[in-house]
Image 1 (cartoon, one colour):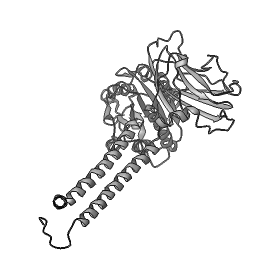
Image 2 (cartoon, one colour):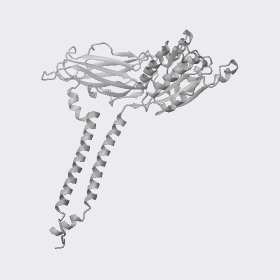
Image 3 (cartoon, one colour):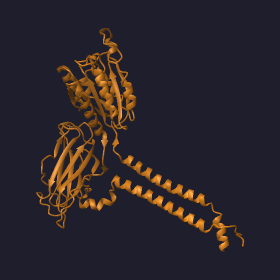
Image 4 (cartoon, helix red, strand yellow):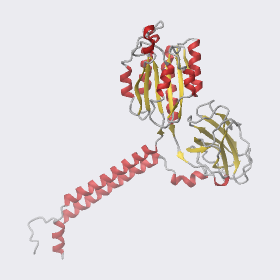
Length: 457
């Protein structure tokens, strides 16, 4: 029996076994790592919006205004820098007007059609746009109304849509009237917001650019010093791109207060409320704790107006009694800030909560009677932060961790922890592979004869 065993073992391809094991464990570690990275990518903030720049390349942009650089060159440089700094997944595009036809009076008919799409919004588009910007020349007329009409067909997706229009003068190609066009800008059923930047403009142009922004829900920025152009364009674009992003852990608010889902401190949540719903969200509050709930209505793709309100109220879940907030920041009008934000603070000491108690926050949208918004779905972002707090044993607790967090911590691993666990798994797999290799090496040495042997003996 011993002779037979030795014979069978030594006929194995030891090196082949070791190679297969090594490949298996390394492959396993790689797959775990790839899966984890892929999961993070999938769970990363989803950028669902599109942004279009409209650049004025009319002949007035050739002015130098006491400098050695023209307005168009400053604008092109600022645009290139801003677009290059955007996240790669940002869907960005560019339209330019006044770049092909001259501003001769005899050429006005052709000049007032000179609105050209450089690129429709697309991800990983920065290099293509910045290369095209270099070739833009200032020649012709100012046709903002025509360009705003055309931009409606430039958008490709169904998410949020924003235009950033940079101009140094008033529209010289009416009709259409740019301010009137801005009132009804829609692409694939989604309203388009227009932010306008007036580069060294006069009062008449400033009024028109302000009207365009206000009529579409956007903002006007007055660039009265050309050196402010870059910083303003950077800040505005970063803000708009951040509004496209929906961050947070999905949560579903309930229509009944006793069923409100518990939230964790310092965690972003996302949900969607459909008007006229009133949704409840819960948080396990501690005595002597100040709780701040921030609710944002992040969508601009609705017919909500500045006569409609986002509201938040706080209640003791057990008794359904309302809680008096520390600061009465419990309502916000749509269109005043972007996104519309309500900050609601509760001090559990003032609310006379003497034991851990679930505080339920009711979120709803209160439309003006003339607003026809029933059935409108509005995305929300919700976050709870805390300060202080006393646990039942009278010991002070970490203000960023409640008992609800302790109960749910196993299900709420942070990305850093998951990465560390993944790396630990890869290390364990490598250690096992190394151990198996050493075992096989010892077995091989023990069963390898030192000289010629008659294995049939």
